[in-house]
Length: 76
Image (cartoon, rainbow, N blue to C red; front, side):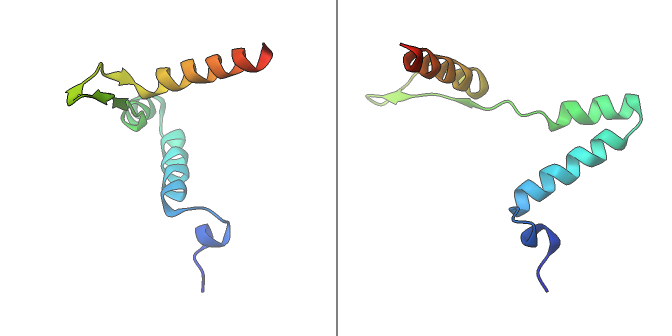
């Protein structure tokens, strides 16, 4: 028998993310806010050149900037 998440075409990580979000949303207000803060991710990356680490950048903001740049190039 195939697991329900696999039959639905989800990866196990995606299934866990959905389940965690459902649990967080079902909590009372004070507990929900604390749980939602724990669920946020803050990923950073740095580009290395010539053996030296460049500036640390937030992945979400770098992704937004790249998307805006790509959208601007498509309109031109």
